[in-house]
Structures are given as C-alpha cells and as structure tokens.
Image: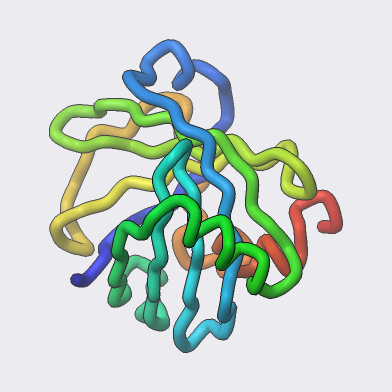
Length: 155
C-alpha cells in the first residue's frame, strides 16, 4: 500500500474539543534505517507491526505495510527494539472529508504536537483547520524514527 500524508505542527490545543477519538500509542523500532523502517506499535490494546519504505523527495509518499498482531506478541517484540520509545496520545478529528490525526508526545518528546493527514494524491486539497501551523512533511526531524534517536527535548 502506498501512504500519502502531510505533516504539520499544531499551534493550539483547540483540536482537543473537536476530537471524536483518542488513543495512547507506544511504539519502537526493530529497524530505523531510513531506507526501510520496521516498527512495533501498541494502540491501546491492539498490537501492530509496520514496514515503511523510504519517502519520496517531498516526504509525502512511501510504501507502507501494516498488520495487526496479538498484543502479547507486540509487547514481546518491544523488548527486542532499538533504544528509544515513542509515547503519545493520538486524537482523531474530522475535517471535511478527511480525518486529521494529532499526536501529542510525552516522555523525551514532550512539548511536540504534530498533525498528519492522509490523502489520496500528493496534490489533493483539504480543509486546513486554524490550529494547523507550519508544514513539516519533508523535515525528517519530525519522523518518529528520528525522534527515537534524537528526542525533541534535545533539540
């Protein structure tokens, strides 16, 4: 599957009142090589393993393969991961025909809030809520695989 998404900084907490769902996400990487990342993730009580390919030049498009795995297996695999864990609360907000996912990071990345929107094409337009700030799609510092190595608090 091809993933097409754009990322933005979030400039206010106004999105919280608009959220229809929130989940805690804990994730780490079996492989954080930018050519191909392999991630283990727990969303509340569900486990997932995800493989992502390298992004295109604009950072919007890349191959993504994800499968749900039993929670116990995800917990076991987290123990095999590289150093560093991402811990965040994800809020989902309906915006026009799209869902915007807003991640509020904690731990070593506390203070960072990023919004992501998945699109059907790289040039698809969407309603931009007033709480979306600067776009950071092509800035690798905002990739979770980078944040486990160089947490936001160290910037």
